[in-house]
Image (tube, rainbow, N blue to C red; front, side, top):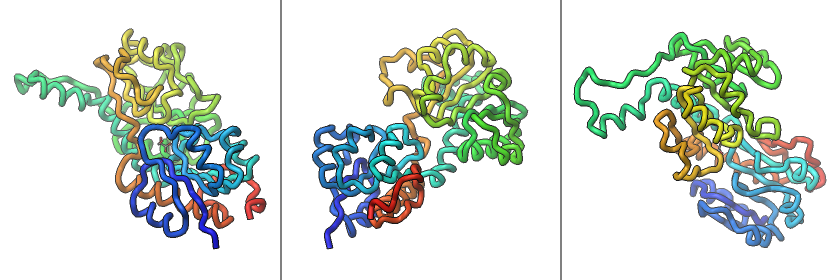
Length: 327
Ligand code: DGY
């Protein structure tokens, strides 16, 4: 029996690598830098499985160098680096990791909401810089209680953020391309995109990156928001026009931004937005906990093994793929 060859791009937990190694021959690129294109194409010549990463462009060109490929899996819920139609055309199922990262990402997103309201990080800077010279000289924030949280992109993560916000006494409104009943049951009210921008005290962005969401937030959108509003992005950096956000923060068209994602990533430390006082940026850590990353890696390996065995992936994105042609 031949052992299937699998490419692994990214650093994965030893436990899941060992599980994969029991059944497959691995070629591993675990450096944080992108894998050189030619090396990947060489490896793909006889690979049957691939674990990809957000910095790999999975498109027609790459797939045309992968004649034996039968499955691709990736440890993320987002897959904006992947051309799904090309995967389907090549009969390659693609699996992502929804579900397992919902609570961790919701925690981080709500942490950014809370921090933007209560200036937690500024408070720490204040203490370190020796500005806390009296118990009566402290920076004031704003309440969450009674405020309106607007979620753009109400999916599983959005609903988990909404639960946390409701526990803090917030009103929830949301905008999706289509209204979803289960969000009404949670007490979240559907509003138009402009209505959300105008009414929200906190705007939380959780949309996947696509042609329709790229640069969704620009000058016009920031100008519609309250000057006291706080903007939180935990989806993809390219959903926002960074220059427009910078201007909106400088001109106090909005009060504050808390970002877990930037465009590009990592953001250049020379960018003037870094030095503003009304911004907090974290390095794309939405799902970055030990437990969640292990669960994501385990699901990724389960997806790969299912694909190699000609079975339906536990979490396949391109469900219309022709599985039978893989056997
Ligand atoms: C995801 O799962 O898409 C996270 O943003 C990590 O890339």
